[in-house]
Image (tube, rainbow, N blue to C red; front, side, top):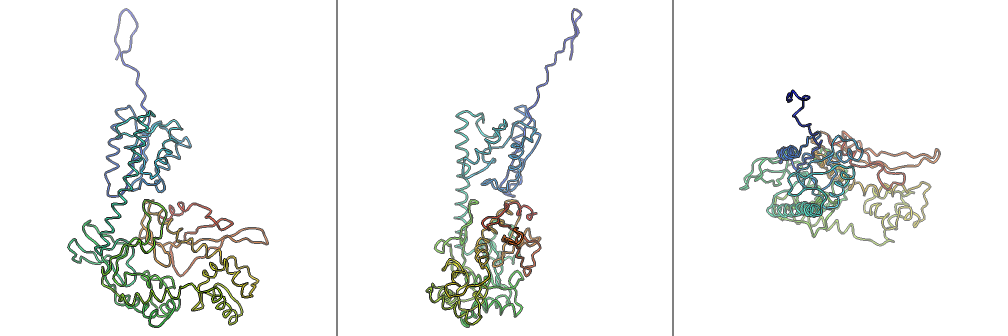
Length: 489
C-alpha cells in the first residue's frame, strides 16, 4: 500500500518479503500397525516449519521399517545419498524426534549420519524434542542421552518380547515357522477352543488368538511314521529312505522330491513327538544369525498331539548319534580303500553314495582335504579335486547367505518363507526363488574366468538368485541387498 504526499515522492509502506527456508522432512514408522504414525509426525513437523518460517519441499518416508539399522531404510539412504551428492534444494532436514532418525544400537552410527548432513551445511532439526539442535554443549548432551535411550528401548522391548514368546511356548502355543509335513496349524481362541485350520501363508487376525499344531492328512502322517520305522526298525540310511519315498511318489510338504537332508530334518524334529521347541536360532536386534546350542532351546513336552512316540524318537536319535560317532582315522581310510578296490576309483560322490561311510565332508575335515585322504590310500587322481572342497565350503556358507537374503527382503517390506532342506524361498506368497552360489572357474587355455551356476531344475523355482563369488571363491562379488531388493517386489 502506498501513501501520497504533495511535498515529496510516493513512498511504499509494505516491508520486503522474507524468503522462507526450504526444508525436507523425514518420517518413519516401525510396523504396519502404526498406520497413522507418519501422519502424526508430519503434522508436528509442518507446525514446527510454519513457526520457523520454513517450507517443506521434499519428503522422505520409511514405512514399516525398523530403526535398528540403516539396511532396508531406502528413504534414509536416499536422503543421505542426495546430501552427499549435493542433489538437494533444501538447507534443513526436519525429523519428529531422535528415535525416528533411528534406534541404532551404536549411538555413534546415528551421530555419523547427522554429521554427514551437517558437513554439507544442512542442519537436522528434531521438531518434538525439548532442545534446540544448535551444536551447543547442552544439545550435544541431550542428543547423546536420547540416542542411548532410543537404542536401550529396542533392547528392552526385544527382551520383553522374547520373554513373552517363551511364556507362550511353555503354554504349548506355536510361534512362527512352517508346521512341517504331517502337521497343520490350528487356530484357537483365548479359551483353547479350536477355530479352524490356517492355510499356508494365512495369519491370525485377533491378538488373543493362538496357534497350535495338530496332525495333518492321514497320508502325510503315515509318511512321517514310515520314515521313523525305516530308520529305526529297518536300519536304513537317510539317503536310502529318500530314494524309497521318491520311488513311491511321495512328496514333501512343499510338493518337492525328498533328499537325505529333508529326511534328517524330520528325524530330528521333536514336534513329531508332541514337543514344542523354540529358540533353536536367533536373530535378535538384527544382529548376525546364530544357531543356539540345545541347552538354550525353550521346550514344552506334550504340547501337541504326537505323531510318533517319544520312545521311537529317542531310539532314532541314539542311532543317529552312534552313526555319527567319531571313528578312528585308520578305520575311515580302510572304508575308503574298500571303495577303491570295488570301484577302481574314489570320488566325493562315491563316498556320499556308499552306505555306512562318513560323508565326504567328514573326510575333508579330518584329513584337511579329500585329495590328502586319497593320497593316504595310494590313490592319485589325474583330475583336480580342489573344486569339491570349494563346493563343500560354499555349501556350508549357503545357509548364511540365504538368511541374509531373507533379512533383506523382510527389511524391504516383503514376506518370505523358507523350505527346510532345499532353501526354496516363497516371496510375498506370489513366486518361488532358489538361491545358488556360483563358483569361479579359471579357463587356463584363454586365461579367463567364468562362473558355473548350479541350477537345480527339480525345485522348479520361478526365479533363481545367483550369488557370484570372486575369483578366489572367498567373498561374493556384489551386495546381497541388491538381489534381495530386486526380488522382494
